[in-house]
Image 1 (cartoon, rainbow, N blue to C red):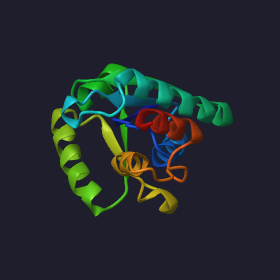
Image 2 (tube, rainbow, N blue to C red; image 1 turned 45 degrees about the horizontal axis):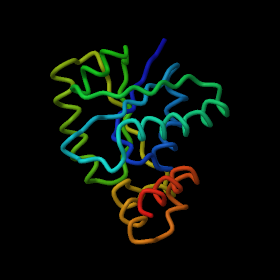
Image 3 (cartoon, rainbow, N blue to C red; image 1 turned 90 degrees about the horizontal axis):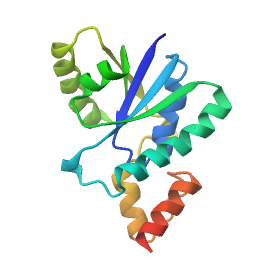
Image 4 (cartoon, helix red, strand yellow; image 1 turned 120 degrees about the vertical axis):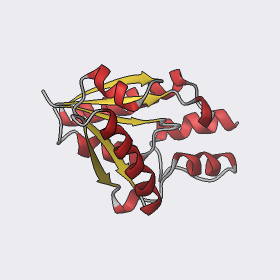
Length: 163
């Protein structure tokens, strides 16, 4: 069984994330969504809220595709998380050149730690390239409409938090 790991903070999960998830499902038998516990980023939503949002969004994808998705919170090194879940592939989404520079360094470090785990980059869909969780939160905080960037359930969670 080919297991892939798609890691991120998902604070919150966006349509860009779900696009990558749906497309990554074609590459693996099981996709593990690694929800990172990154205290340095000071997430807006708690780990439990982020996991619940990812699970809810993935339920719809599973219903449509019949694929297998697991949600797995983690706080250790990405490469160790990949080993923990049995992943042989790490899936990463790219939006722009700035993403590539950071991801290029990450791949080099991960390969030095475990060359048996490959990283696959997926370019964001052209309609989703500008979407970033940080910007979505800023738009919501300032009263803007985020419905082009997140699902209605995530939009409602953002609105409730900023109310």
